[in-house]
Length: 345
Image (cartoon, rainbow, N blue to C red; front, side, top):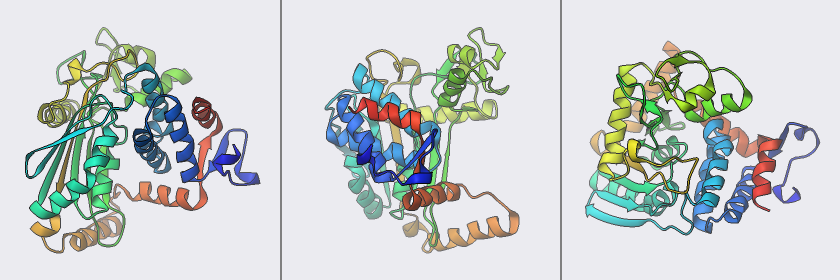
């Protein structure tokens, strides 16, 4: 792994390898190309996956990147797919991902979306027919770093039981929000509608560990702490009906408005050869145009909340982890890196 530019001596153990982010991205790109991706899609997904890993979001980082590799090989992600962008109205950019990855459509439209938000005060990106998008906060944070307030929603195959249901009706249907600050990283909130991420339950099943009560139902609709039974049953929403209602709201925004598959109609993201046809909705707002001095005012408020009231400010720890990884490299599980590197050979 000389090409990976590993750091020296003590940074390499039997379990982990410390590697620079650009080198890690190169390994991921090589693996994706080998599995059938074209260069643009490979770089788009590699950037997002490495960013998630560096930010401490392990469940949607490199471990989830393996799902992309498997899906390129199986055809769930269409090789060579190119997003088709249209403008139904001046403020709206619609993307048909063509069975490809969600990131490429957003990357293609990004500068146009930023310009639309600044020119009209609001811009909307709505995408259908894509593979699931991993870390949703990745999309809103990019807009916040360009000075725009952003809200995003996405869906996928049914995994979560809606309010009153015992069978899967929605995906984990996350919602992400980011707002720019004058002096510091963006406020960034990124959370699923489920009590736990599906990948966390899958990992528990692989490790043979139980899951907490309140996370899932088995296939007969009864509460379970067995992750294998949970994967055959349904996840539960956080906060009961309130979380399930948020999942429904996300479903309407991401699948309804974008024209994507409803979660009930979406093929699996981990089995078969069909794309889940997931949706992505992103709203970008020029907060400065509405409230001059917004970023400065928000910065003062967040500092007050953290300093005087000990409020946890979402986004700070992710930014700190990313900055540390950029300077000192990222510690990656050797077995995980080997699996990705092997796919690229």
